[in-house]
Amino acid sequence: MADLGHRPATPAEALDELLAGNERFVMGVRVHPHQDAERRAALAGSQRPFAVVFGCSDSRLAAEIIFDRGLGDLFVVRTAGHIIGAEVLASIEYGVTVLGAPLVVVLGHDSCGAIQAAHDAMTGKLLPGPGLEAIVDRVTPSIRHAHTRDITDQDLIADVHVQWTIDMITSQDTALAETVAAGHCAVVGMAYRLADGRVTVIPAAPAGA
Image (cartoon, rainbow, N blue to C red; front, side):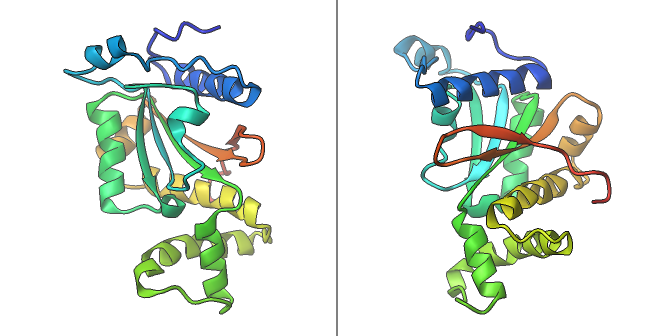
C-alpha cells in the first residue's frame, strides 16, 4: 500500500494516489485516511491538497468518498453537469496556483441529469425552467459536438462533455493554463460509473478533435 502520509508532488503521483483510493473504494477495503482529530488539528493553519477535483454536483459523486481520501487531500469544486463559469475557473486556479495542487481532475459520470436535461431541451421534449437555462446552455455545446462525431449514447456524450470542459479550462489565458503548459500541473478527465463505483481515465482527445 502507498504511504498515505506522503503528499504526492507530481501529476503522475497524484493520479496514482487517486486511482489507488478508488480501487480501495470499489473493493470495499477503504482505509479512511486523514479523518482523525490529529489531521484536523494539523490543517488548522494551512492546507496543501494534492489534487483539485472539479465534478458534477450529483449527490452520488462525493470525491473524498469515492477516492478514499480525507481532510486536506482534495480541493473540490462542484457544479451541476460540471459547467464552467468565472467563479469555477478562479476556484480551480486557486487550488493549483496558490495551494500548489499538481493535478486537476474533471469528473463526469453516467446517467447525468444535466446532460439529459440539455438533450430534452434540444429535442423539444422538455424545456428547462428559467432557473435551469444556465445549465442547459452550457451543456448543449458538448452534445452538439458529440453529434458531429456521430456519438449519441448519453454516457459517451458525458465523456465528450468532460473533454469539452477540459478544453475550456486549458484554453483560457490564465496562470492556470501557464502552469499546465509548463508541466507543473496536469488536467485529466475521469468517468465515474454509478453502479460499480469505479472511475476510469478518459483518453485525451486528439488535438483539434
